[in-house]
Length: 96
Image (cartoon, rainbow, N blue to C red; front, side, top):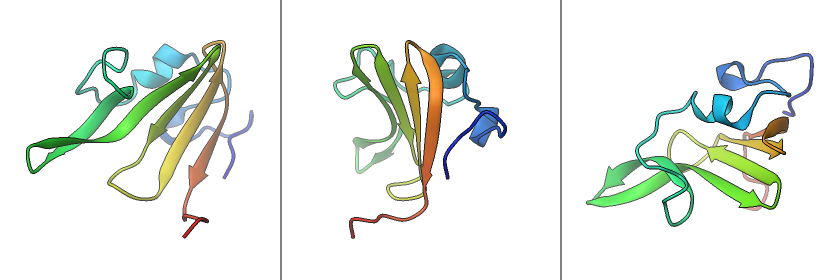
């Protein structure tokens, strides 16, 4: 599934939303800017934090990746200049 201008995505995320507005729609257990791999959400398993939400950056581009548990479905939200350009929901792993 790909996001477009006519349909809101999960958590009412839409193309054109700001990065901070989208990030605020998810729980935060860590500050993604200070986390080693951009983690902001996760769960403790055997005293180890397992990320289920993180931010990646590449110049003016960012991605927020979230998934409910350690597998699919996975939501990837793409930003350019801190504005949502599109999102993708992965329902199965095509690489298995």
